[in-house]
Image (cartoon, rainbow, N blue to C red):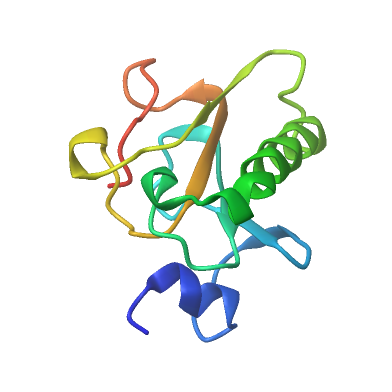
Length: 118
């Protein structure tokens, strides 16, 4: 499979992993848009929010709760942070694998949050 996130999940590609369980993995974004920029990724290959099915309904909640926990772990839970799903090319999604951006601790783009994967 050519999906870079699937390769990370399978341990075939390196990433700075900060969290993992049986359904999710989280790692630092290689092109951060904020001082803290993590990606919370479904281990199951789902292309985007548009591809979610009823059987997948729990994964988004688990992703958000993992991001909440990571925000606390990285010390940005009190100062504030953003959670962003980019959906489709027009929505800024570059990697075709369901993932949630956790951004906080000061933004690197002239104070503006990054909304694209690149």
